[in-house]
Length: 460
Ligand SMILES: Cc1cc2nc3c(=O)[nH]c(=O)nc-3n(C[C@H](O)[C@H](O)[C@H](O)COP(=O)(O)OP(=O)(O)OC[C@H]3O[C@@H](n4cnc5c(N)ncnc54)[C@H](O)[C@@H]3O)c2cc1C
Ligand code: SF4
Image 1: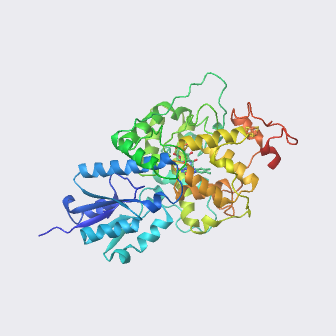
Image 2: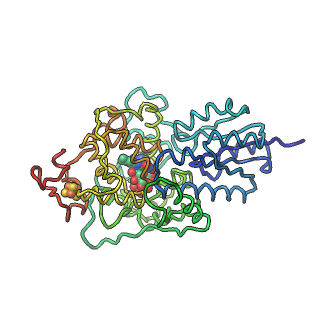
Image 3: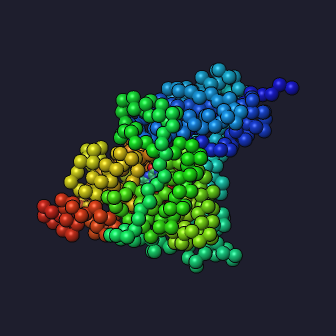
């Protein structure tokens, strides 16, 4: 009997090892009859003048993934097309599959396309549920009647997945949350900060760097690209974090420094967001590190809260609030984004340092995103949509499902308080306490009026 020819479309941020669509196709035919489609969509890649290092990461990871699939015996149809839809149409015209499998995208627009796919292609299409997120495997609040807050959401995830629980199902250490122990500034001396693992670009990545450098618009430069681009790289980066930075992750989670962008953070969101690392595996490995005595509970709990708490909660909020979230503007802020956001040319040293870093690396850690950039934008009354677009454009880990609830919901409190119960705003006092930015700044963090007054104080 002839085997049916089945197609599988894998969007570029779903580079999963056992992609559900591949597994579904394998129930109907053998590998030799599965055609895997990956599309580099010009429209998608140039929708905004994206951070060039993000494009290198995404395209190189997609091209490496295609190689991985070929080595595993699949036929890969790797296309550059005007749009995902155009790539899909061309694929179907070329291969005439009897059926196409795909997995629901993390983002709203992708799902709209997937809903219309069968009509667009004139072929049977199966869209499988998204498994990249724990919330896709277990949703604690499928139809919430009351307001859901992070803490409840997080506890439900911990209970369901059995993370950091004792034999009675209660939280290890007698508390769900050790945040109070996790708010230390860096000591002036005596604490070595290990650099995260860097990866030298291989020939394929170097080709991608050339391709991206030739794009007319973009933030930053491709030079100095040193992120991993394969699952093995991402796992090595995770191991490096567990070994060298997890133990101090908790206490210095909120600290900021002009000497180090990453400090004790993991720098793993770029990999997680394209499917190279699995959140549950990461949480379990962090838990094992605690049981092996490699890191204290406050650090491990803090890290697990980010992964199974905040990250999942943010994804959940995105799907609760879309598509309205994109235009939410609860405080009716309308000021344009200042021009220095594209250059870092401001006398405010904290903003200068963080923005320059974002332009160069595509990265700043959470507190800098929240308490420097968004704090300023909230206090200055900047239009939330403009801030959202800036984050989407500039960061290596930026995707709409994660940027929009974090910026419009958490950072700017513009969603009517659905994501965060209160606005995250602070005067210079907070930045002065948690960072070394104020040293040498032209403004004085302790002054509230007059020419030397820190703008954060004046606006606050
Ligand atoms: C205004 C604003 C914009 C943000 N934009 C992005 C973005 O574009 N992409 C992105 O992945 N995260 C974003 N975040 C969340 C968080 O700041 C980043 O995930 C984190 O800084 C990434 O660095 P890291 O991997 O070193 O994180 P770590 O501090 O090491 O944390 C570990 C992991 O926890 C997860 N995490 C922690 N907090 C959040 C959160 N609030 N939302 C989602 N995941 C979280 C991430 O996967 C992260 O890798 C944003 C937060 C704010 C306040
Ligand atoms: S003094 Fe104000 S503007 Fe300058 S670094 Fe400190 S908080 Fe930022």
